[in-house]
Amino acid sequence: MDDERATITAEFLDNDIHVLSTDPLRGTLELVADDDEIIEVEFTRDSAEALLSALVQFLERGEGRDAPRNITSSPLQ
Image (cartoon, rainbow, N blue to C red; front, side, top):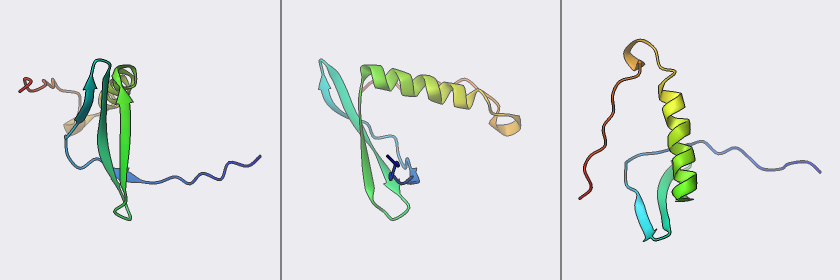
């Protein structure tokens, strides 16, 4: 069976995370595709931790001006 899924290029435009539930922890973030289609990504604590780990690995690969630097999160409001 052939895989007929298409790759969609999308961009994360801001840092809005929408918390749907705190117990269990669930949330969403939005991506905007090249054709302005909104893609909603839903995640749980486990998938958020996996994404965070992947993003840290990506950032650690930077060189020159994109070399790794300390990033602190803003306090919860």
